[in-house]
Length: 313
Image 1 (cartoon, one colour):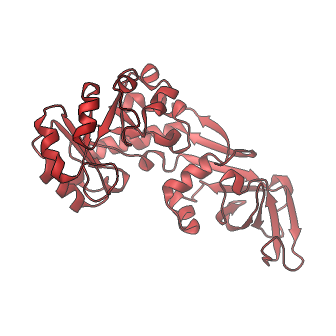
Image 2: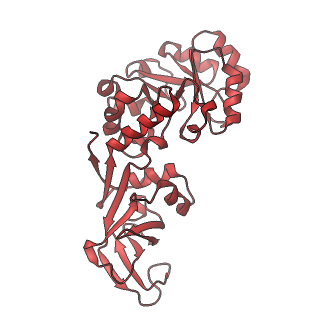
Image 3: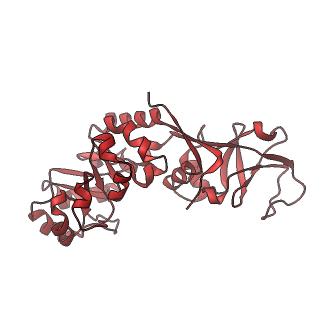
């Protein structure tokens, strides 16, 4: 768990998120099911969902509690699919919040058939999805009119089409990684990261600047000049790239609630801004420096500080 630093500002551009969705709709020509799990990748699902409701057909959460916690149906009038494994076998837990469960075996279907379940098909992910050998038993029941898979390759999309094509009313396979592949669009797309890319700016300011005097910090790093920011690994920060006064620089060492940043002799005190994400420093660039994924980078940095929302219009 990370804790927001009061010294870090997280600006979330709701207009940019809406524009991202509009571009996805224009390019694919199919309905968008917006993924808002994990508190909309850390951006705040309670604010994101109403801001984009008029541009999406529905939402995807991981579990029904994510929808009920933000009163998703009441705020948007749009239903959701819980794409994680069914935590509850009680259909009322889904029906009450207009959330449809994803099922992966006949037993789950029997328990949740009154909640209008969606079949999740395993095409290679190998987690909470239906083995191909059980698909027929589920579809013959007539209780599933929709199916999806967590696909990352066109080969997986092909397997999905071969398994359920023509047997359900709607199919979807494409998350953010397959939005450039028309063969993956099918009847709907489920973008997550693609909705939020470029919409978050995370910044803080130096609280100290120093001419380095030999090895510094816990790790003994050596640079001519360094500064300190009040964000650390308790806030989700890692070593890697940053911008200092608009110039590409490095987070040299991360402590519990502070971090060392490489600066130059012209960077002075509180007037010096350090950008952790945004202004040309992308989620992918941060993730590369972290040896991680852009999804993790945007989530960690979006929860690093205090959120502020730029208007949707």
